[in-house]
Length: 392
Image 1 (tube, rainbow, N blue to C red):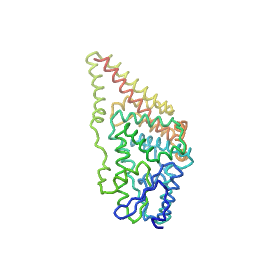
Image 2: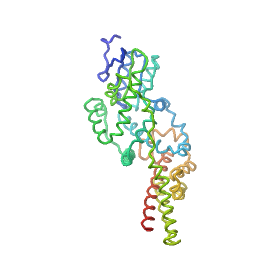
Image 3: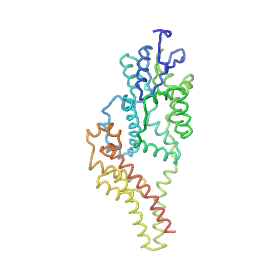
Image 4: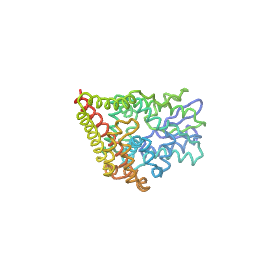
């Protein structure tokens, strides 16, 4: 079909790059209309290559629906990746709830692009940066208080059931609405936007620019279209966009320094106030740390043995930077109630409701880890402050 005969959706933009035609399809990730936009564009253009805003792991998550059932929760907890998985599930929960309200599977437009590329023999390019790198760069460059605000916001999204309709989603694809959203987002979280949006604009643009073929269709979120257009015209290095942020020295200083200070205060109290005073400090440390961590495990509805393990572990793990009370409690919860295959298969449904987070054995383990760790951290600061004030 000639260029003059094409009747493309209004949200599709054609760009000429080095004598080749690139068609940018700006989509909403939970929109039936976006699925139709993708279908019409690929069918009319007949591209040599289809680029999608997916990385390998996100592509596998969309196309391999049984991936949940293959997760090894014991390994995840042991390697300290529980909070990362928990944050991913929270975001997945939001998109699934939104998709259910609109009657469309999240990422359906990407799946349609993948399906049509395979059906027509077009080359498929997974053009997005790896999600793990994006998350680590986004989180790693944030300040401490911004991280707290973000974590609280993500946690609150479990309990929020915002009224969102299809008209609202489609409005997000309009340029003026999108710019307003981005302006507000930039004001609140400028560093997040830089890593999550701006860097990926450059990355996507270069992947699309170097895609093979005379005709290329690129299916991307509407929020990336303008950024891609700004960067696709020239070669830009993207190697540094895959570098992980340098580790700050302060977390290491706190991890090792705080336990050393606590132990030092207890020892100093022994020589200054006597053995009875030091014993009281030790009791304070054990009870405050243990009780708050156990309270966290109980708030996640952990097994009684899990709650006891959090109580026993917290006073010790708070003095050991290589361990965490939540890891111990999580592993015990796995031991007393290891998720079945059916529990893992039900995970996508469980995260759609508040009740599901607390009843599905898989998500309960993640909540145990998170809440027990949170209680232990609170216990460390409260007990440490208490011991310090009564010892000086």
